[in-house]
Image (tube, rainbow, N blue to C red; front, side, top):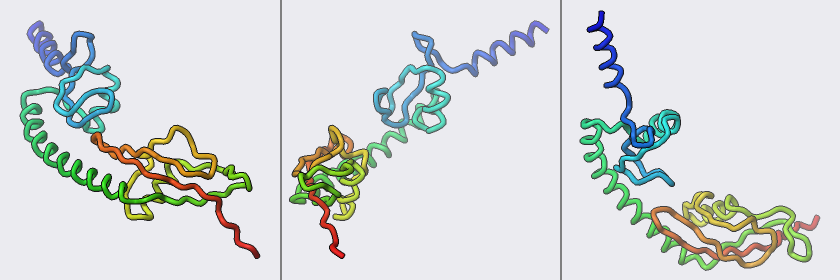
Length: 177
């Protein structure tokens, strides 16, 4: 009976995740995670964050010798894919720089104050109209645009690739019936 209890104790310890100095789980990141670390780093996180977010989404794995070998192979493939993605983003940035300005029409009163506002979704939609694939989360605005004028908007395309685009907000022409 004592042997069985000792065996159960060994099994339990063997299946427990590795713990760091602050009693958090040790994980190896399989992807870059913002505010946590880069791919391949061993990080210590709270157990709930690991179980509920990082592990189910495939952003991290438990650092076993087998997983570390797989991660080294995976790193090579990801590095090549990352280089191709960076080249695509730089080409996109150059295309955006060639655009003189975007024109966005919005409902406005006579003084130029918009009834609504122009936000990242509107700017992204206008760029898509020019065949430039920019997502709304790439558009960096300090706040919504509420007046018709010419604005310079920063775009963070990813991987330290940035661009600027000029956005001209003009009052929408009304159709006379």
